[in-house]
Amino acid sequence: MAVELAKKEESLSNRFMNAVVKEFSGSVGEVALTNFQRRLAQNYFIAVDQALVKAEQKRQMKKSNKDPLAVTWSNIDMQQLALDVVACARVGLDPAQPNQVSPVPYKDNNKGKYVIVFIDGYWGIELKGCKYGLDIPDSVTVELVYQNDHFKPIKKDANNKVESYEFDVQNPFDRGELAGGFYYHSFNENPTKNRLVVMTLKDILKRKPQYAAAEFWGGEKTIWKDGKPAGKEKVEGWYEHMCWKTIYRAAYRDITIDSQKIDDDYLRLKKQEELFGDRELEAEIEAEANGPVIDIEYAEAEEVVTDGEPEPETNEKPPKTEQKAPGKEQNGQQSIDGPGF
Image 1 (cartoon, rainbow, N blue to C red):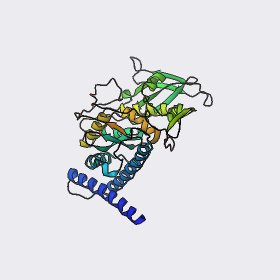
Image 2 (image 1 turned 60 degrees about the horizontal axis):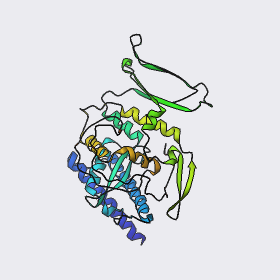
Image 3 (image 1 turned 90 degrees about the horizontal axis):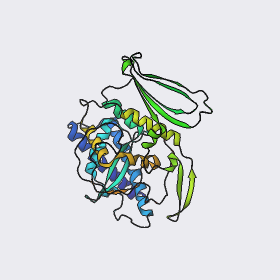
Image 4 (image 1 turned 180 degrees about the vertical axis):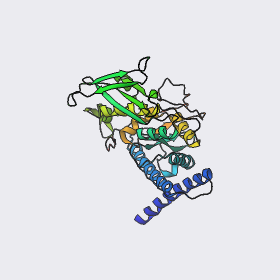
């Protein structure tokens, strides 16, 4: 039995690797994968395999509305997966590194198969911002500000050529309630380009996913017993760190993309973001990295390159989707390994 299982796993990994090698060869010429590229491909196989196992466990635990299609490798759109893995790998995103990129299985009802969506973590957003940025800051400062801190923004005006700020933590052991935060782009050679963006707590919470996990943002969590809700419990979560991560994401999304650096890999990843909308998926990534399966039906979307926060008021044309809201139809048996900071 163990031998048969080993052969099965080997065939799965070989099938995946062959598909990735084919896409690499078709896009960059008939060349062998470098050791780094091969290692990345192996990391993607492991990450996707873990995502499928967790998603299938959740499917099996459902008492009702269980999708008849098993979340297994045989039901994956391998061609799309290979294309997306190649794009992520060439950008440099490594799923084995924390907070870079995470796979989420989705059901494509048009194809009758599952697709794997790769969602950037906040370090992945930083990596892409630095790789494709037009005017990359020499340093990016991200800070939370509390009521007892001294914070004074210094805006650029006729008497002050450089935008800056004063920030002093006057009592590190009693900083008071969280009031907001800021990020600061600084340029060594040309400090007149330095930029300060202040975010109130209201600004931060506007970017909080609608179905944010209580394990991370704090709040009430449903207690499940035998697949049924059995009350609520208060969870402290990691509220302050999640607010800091929200500002961090905004800081690197605020780097203007250089149109001359845009390549097919960037376009493919950007198109995937627009098709599935990563704002709500961030909640799933935070909760358990490789979250539950969500049934969707989407139409083809144009490749549109935009920049900035994926807020609802953007000019994106969302695809026609039919989604089960993350966290609404779950059995609550979440696997939490910690915040992965």
